[in-house]
Image (spheres, rainbow, N blue to C red):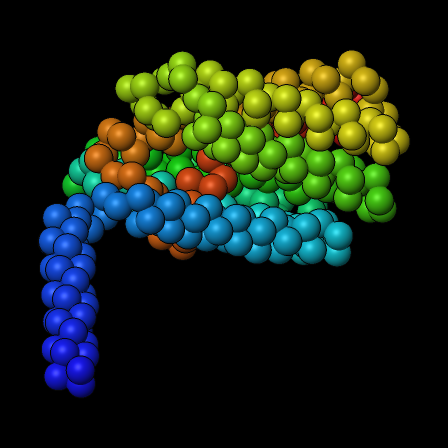
Length: 319
């Protein structure tokens, strides 16, 4: 009886071992089949993890950028100008780097100096100060061109356009902040910038999930009409919120117009910078903002959006 029981036990153990070995072999075959996909990063788990990491990185970086800007706006016109100076210098530097990839040779010393000076000029409170700074910049670029045989007209144009495109446009944020030293100026400035940020964010998330109709496939394949509509709704919502909060001088009509125009020109600014990058064959203008690329990638919408907001508020009698 004991021999039979022992034989049966050994048989059961052998079957268990064979079953375990078969299971291990099956798992190994599955692993080997999945190995090429794993090497390509094509597994579902890898895609989900990578997508989650990108979104979290983008949100965290954007939050730090927004909170730093908000703190400067709350502290006053001078801190706002200092932050805008830093943004302008970085954006202009990245722009010059892109143009060098296309063979241009701008005078970065003069251009970057102008990029820092332009946002400070509104603090003087006089138009003549800004005009003098602009004339000095033009004169320096002209003098450099005269004494530099290797420079051509394209280099002069790029040198001049860099700070005008990045810094002079961002200076509108400082002007808007200076319209009022109190809560009214804080709300208006943050509302203008917030409408651009929300426009970008909603366009990105709505476009990635719902986008079916391409907006500008040759320039920016990921942008969609659905994303554009979502972004415009977000921009208008922020401007209407400013009206509801009682920002002095802001009417409902002006709020709706501001939301629509800022939203549209924010997209134009984004596409313009995308066209520059596509022309030189790069994806990002830099790497300073993980999840976004360079600061110019993050601010391209703000350049046009803030300028249009300034013009609208000026014509509307608020500045």
